[in-house]
Amino acid sequence: MDATRGPNRTWGQGRLGPVAGVAVVVVVGLLVLMALGGRAEVAEGRAQGEAGQAASASGEQSITTVGYGQASVPAETVVVQFVVSTQEAFGGPFPRLSPNDTLGEAERAAAEPIVQALGEAGVAEDAIEVLTSPALGSGFGPQGGRGVYRLDLTVEGPDVTLEGLNEIVNAAGQATAEEGQILAFIGARYLVSDCGPVRLASREAANEDALARAEEQAALMGVGLGEELRSVDGAAAAGSAGFSPFGGVLPTGVGGCDPVTDPSVTFGVGASVSVPAFDPVAPAEVAVYTEVAVTYAVDEDAAPPDVGSLPATPEATPAE
Image 1 (spheres, rainbow, N blue to C red):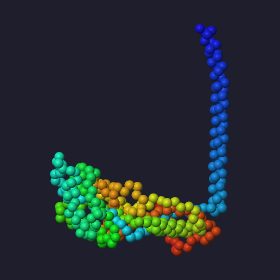
Image 2: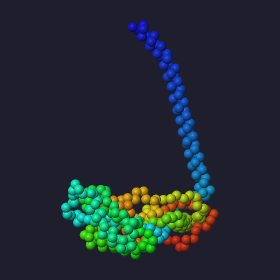
Image 3: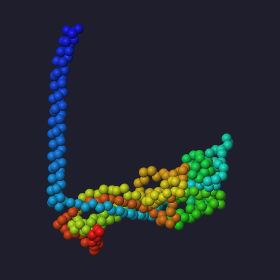
Image 4: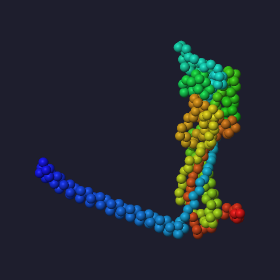
């Protein structure tokens, strides 16, 4: 047994020896390459640091400021949404469907006098859509869309004014009150066919604001302001957020030219809408907000910008 196993064991050792040697050489080679790479990275970092110091020494410094701009134009089209509940507010028995009833049939019938009142207020009948869906409801009525409907209106032409929109809203409010219904939500989104000019005007205002801030900063630093080096768009808030008293979050002041990740929000806990809340006193305009960060070179050979009288530096108060 020993005589048989001995040669096998010796043969195995003979085969493993060169493989192990090669593995050691490979590992050592990798370590050497890593060391050389690390030295190269250190050298590159040192070179970059020296280049940055040289740039700083030669006056290649910069000032970065953030500018804010806003521009608005009269709206050409307005999308209006009304969420209406046929139920008493947070009370009363929930309506039940009988086997012969059709979901949405009662809600469409309840919407007819409201649609008629809107037509008398100047809204074209083909511009009004009655929406019933199981997705509606639960915030001002039972689950499953029973007792709740939404009216979608597209308003164009001479009615796209604050006065014209308030007349439409008042007509809807009057009609729902007379029918014993609840006008739960009023929303509007203002649109224009070409967003290019208003976006450009907003960006121009933001760049002018960034330049004014950079001039103030340069004056405070006592250096001259050079050319613009870099510009980066910021995430300017397209209006503020309005909070529903029933837990939903509604964006306000969002114009049709502002990018919106998800325009649909939920009012209450179930009445879905896709437009911001209507402001009865805000102009019927499309507003665009722009935020831009601009970097300017520092020109040490130029005089600091003249921005008027700078505030006096407060004297330091010694600690007691």
